[in-house]
Amino acid sequence: MSPSSSGFRIGQGWDVHRIVTGRPLILGGITIPSDFGLEGHSDADVLAHAITDAILGAISAGDIGMHFPDTDPRWKGCDSLQFLRHACDLASEAGFTIGNVDSTVILEKPKLKDFRLPIRESLAKTMGLELSQVSVKFKTAERVGPVGEGKSSEAQAVVLLCSR
Ligand code: C5P
Ligand code: MG
Image (cartoon, rainbow, N blue to C red; front, side, top):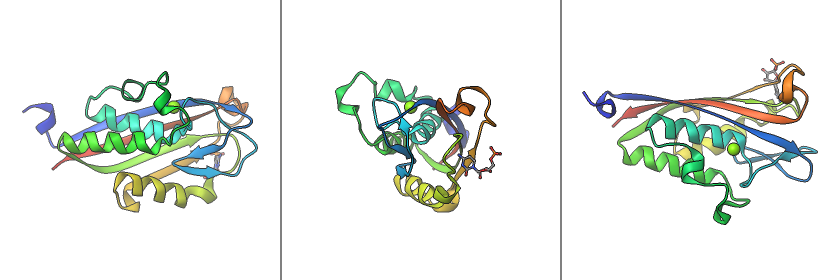
């Protein structure tokens, strides 16, 4: 049985972006009220990037930088949800639907839990999924390391793909 006909594929994604002032904080396509944002070539949506990499990983299609190089002016300041949509399209073309996505954003502040629903709705809409298929969790780094010291934010994601 070839790997792609085995029924399921799993993918994992991780990303980190530096915290800077003068940029918006965008997570899963939602702008979070904040005194600082994330640095990056695109809109630096660390959550969208981690989920995109998880989907690309599940279909062994490389990583986000391979599809959307940060040296390409086309992606400067762009909405990262388009990266996510592209990864979903590739998964669909490879014969898969998305079973579920689970993700975690690690950010010391601000508190994100009040934005969980809009972020999940935004991601679900982008990926063409039901709300129940998209989980988003938030963690601090307990003031330890670069994330804990407020220098950066990380995101992690896993995705399950099911063959059609
Ligand atoms: O990191 P910690 O376990 O202390 O986080 C406790 C809770 O705070 C999390 O379960 C999450 O719901 C919430 N949280 C948040 N925004 C963050 C970090 C954590 O809403 N930036
Ligand atoms: Mg990124």
